[in-house]
Amino acid sequence: MTSQSMQRFFEIRKTHVQWALLLFMIVTLSSIEGSERIRVFDNFKVLNNSVHERSATGFGADYFMSRVLNKTADMQTAAAADGVGCVVVVADSGDFPALTPHSLSMARTLFAPKGLYPPHVHPTATELVYVAEGSLLAGFIDPVNNSIYQQSLYNGELFFFPRGVLHFLLNVNADRLAITISVFNDSHASMS
Image (cartoon, rainbow, N blue to C red; front, side, top):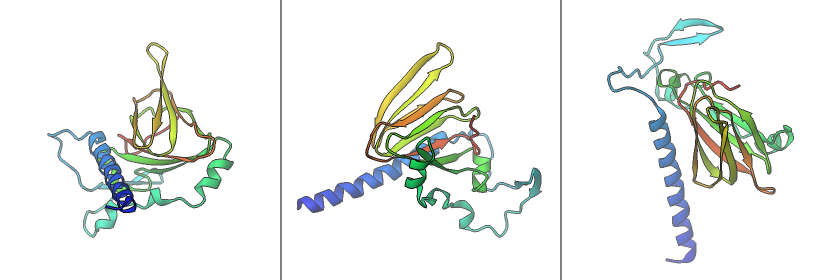
């Protein structure tokens, strides 16, 4: 094999590993008990603070897919200009109703060089972060003993934030973007 074909092989393999890891994260974080009846459809949709019944008839495969995380229009410029240095695109039950009965949501975050995702809390969800590109410093504060846990992360690595802990992410690189994919075990992971 030539060096060019070897490089292509490893690029393809890396992509497959990333998708397999993402699928594993989604399955692992979904918290469906074995005795619970699995609901494929969300039979109720909340619109303007009122509940409207939905029928499962007439739904196609498009109900189970979303392009929300593809919203990349000028994210790089927005990340650099927002004053903090990151832009988050979220796929949750608000944009993707199929997630509602399954307690899942995702986010894609683009960090400008030296961009910070400021300290925040998800009171209703744990978060598993996958570094898709770049290098970051991730950390959280243990509220019981006021200890800080932080770790440098690189491409392909994961970091777990327990529910309700104050946490942050920082792109440590001064000249490269960083991208993360996060999975939450709540269909609408609120933030404070």
